[in-house]
Amino acid sequence: MSQSMQLLKRECGYYTIAIVVIIAFLALLASRSGTVTTANTVKTTSEEVAATEVFYAAEFALAEALIWLGSNDATATPQTGAGVPNGAGNNTPRSYATSFWFEESGGFTRVYARATGSDGSSATISQWLRAGIDVLNTDALKQPFGIGGSLSGVTGTGDVNAIGSSGTIPAGYYSLRVENGESTGGSYGNLNNGGEAIVDGEWSSGVSDIWDKYFSITRAEMQALAATSSQVTWVAANESYPSQGSGTLSSPAILILNDCAVNKKLNGGFTFIGIIFIDAGPCSMQGWSMSIKGSLAVNGDITKLTANTLFEAYYIEATDSAMSSGAGGLDAFDADAFGSTVVLPGTWTDTEVN
Amino acid sequence: MVAIAIASFIALAATSYYAAMFSASNAVRNTASAQAHFNAVANTLVAEIRRSGYRGSPTEVAAYVATTGNSSGTPTVGSYPAVETATDCALVAYARDYTCASGDDSNFTECAAGVGTVTLHYRSGLRLSSGVIEAVSVIHPNQYIGSAPVDSSCTATGGTSAWAPLSETAELYFDQFAITEQASTIYDGDTTCVLGTAGTDCQSNVYADCGDSISCRIKRVYKVEVCAYPTNTDGLCDPNYGGSVPSGQLYNEFFVTPRNDVLISKDYSS
Image (tube, rainbow over all chains, first blue to last red; front, side, top):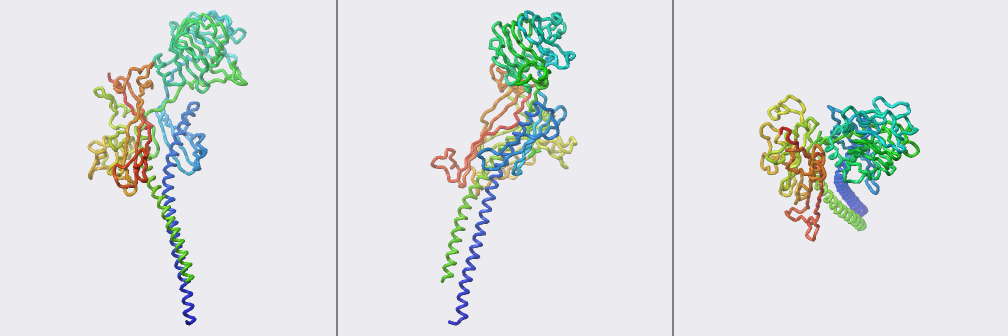
């Protein structure tokens, strides 16, 4: 066999290997292409899950906005929410930043809530709001102690705290208010014995039912409201008084008591923030022992007040407060906190549509 | 011979690898693709039901609520019901911004009023037809001054049908698609108490009072069932995943609540 033939045979082997390697390479490329297609398909499914997730984060932002609005005024400036962290045990590294802002139009407020994911996803939703039923009359908090009759038999050392650091009570405000013609000129037995001077006032002539002096809704409406609002408690005449306080500075409470039988009293030494209205009278408050920041109203005469109940006006700051709250007194609360914002039905939408 | 042996070895290895990768990749892709199709239906429906009942701004809500009421003792929910269900079909309605085009003055009262951008009610929905999920999204037919140019009802067929396929039977055969009202809570629209609740003003009220003596808000929960599989044969779905379950079956049962309650205004004229 000639030398040239031998070289040709060796080259055929190299060509064979080269061709096979190329084919193998192409096969690998095809394989990779298939893998990429699969990965993209899986990614599409994953993105659908992420789109759902970011939407729920936006709903969380909307809830944050409503809570924030409970103690702040609506503003067009975007507020930053707490956000939604990546869940523990969640292998997908997605967390969400939340924000919300407001637009006011024609007596209504529109809240926008947005969530933005760490993966770049985003969702924005909106809801219209209106002011809720403002259940308080403007007179409701002008006296820590309101009486639809007269006050007598004060043998306990109760205190009314209505004068702050200014040393004077605000104009139009009182320590306590009684029925027309029942004022004693600031002397009510042991009430405020050694404490601040009592500034008493009288309801207008003819007013003996002071419900309307405290509330702008009817008794039936208040009872209905109590069925759905955690801020309002309605205690029927045949039911027991609560055994503990309620209300907070950011969400003061309303407690309606429909009788004042002798054996019924609030005497747990607890603190109540808001308004207690006893829709009955005459009442004996024998044995009462608690503190109320806001106002206690009794719709009739009070014949006995024997223990150490403390009445403090809502505007008294912590530095002047006689009520215990940790190391200091109890701070003032905003009377607007009784107001509520109500979601306007039929106005929820997402910006995918509009 | 050595070269052929080496080449054969390489070719065999590459072919085996390719075959294995192709098979595995194909299986994953098919599964993922089926799930993507399946999830698309579920996600679309959830989003549509969620926003159903949106009526626009407070002014537009007030105008819409005025069209609700009570007819002969039966509450009426207005011209654009938030959710309508039928066998294998669900339709939802909600308001959207719409820019009036030339000729729309004769189509929509809102455009005839001379405003460029108006709020119109839209209808969208999903239905099951011969293993295919079909979708529709049009301006609500009740919004037109005359008749709508296309048929968006659940029973629409033929050339005027507004429905278009959302899935392919080659990818996934949809065997079941059902949406039903699972539960509802009816509130007095003014006092917010739940009708029939003892000890409240509305303890004696019932649904038939809505639109008559009281205004109502109705919060509804819908149950959705979707079942699909790759096999192009009807009636194989086994929700219980028993012994006869078709290979690759996807079944989901979920609940969704519209974020907008159904609103019915009481009769203020009496």
